[in-house]
Image (cartoon, rainbow, N blue to C red; front, top):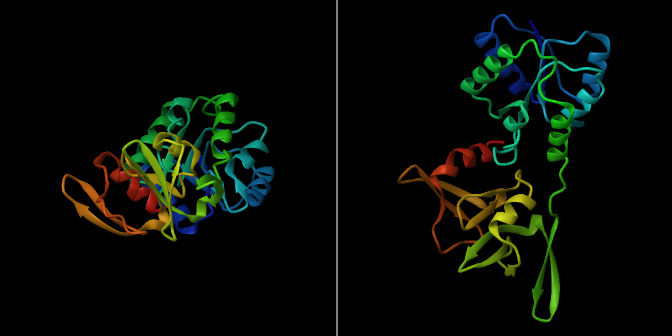
Length: 251
C-alpha cells in the first residue's frame, strides 16, 4: 500500500513517516508534500495513493484545497494543531485525525481504522467534508466593544490577555492592565474566539497564549499558572483540561 504525507513542517513529516514505517511496514510513504502548490503538481503527475496524511493548515493554504483539485480522493487522515475542542466534530463525521504533536498510540488507532475501512473509497461523505471545511474556515471574533462611562471603546482581540468570570460578570483584561465588563458568557467566548490564541482553562478563566508566563505543577494533576497582568486569584488549569492545555501550548 502507498501513502502520501502532506505536511509543511519538515521535522513533523519525517517523524510521521518513521512512525508509519514502524507501525505499518506494509505502507510505503511514496511522497512528502509541503504545500498546496506542490501537492497539486504531484497529484496531477501521479496516480492516487491508498492513503493521504493531510495537514489541514499549510503555509500557502488549506489541505482541503488539494482535495478539491482531485476528482476522487482516497481515505484521508487529517493532522492538525487545533485543540480537541475545536475539532470535536471529526469522529462524528466519520473522518479521523491526528492531533499534533502526533502520539504513536493515536497513529496506531488511526491506521487500524484505515485498515478496517480499506475497501471504502474515501472516508466520509462530501457533505461531511464540507462541514469540516466550514469549521476550519470559520471567522472568529476580531474586536470587542465595551462601554466606558457614556462612551464606547473597541479592543482588538490581540490586546486582550484573558477573560475572567466573577459573580456572574465577565470581564476582559488587556495586556496593559485595563479591565472592562462584557456581555458574554465564558461558554460563548469559547465558541467565538480563535482556539489557536485562547484557551479555556477552567470554569472562570479563558487565557491568551501571550498572557501565560509561568506554569507550575499543582496537586491533583492540575497546573498553576502565572499570568500577566498579575491576577490575585490562583489561576489553575482544571485536571480534565490539563492535557489539552499542554498540547495547546505546544502547537
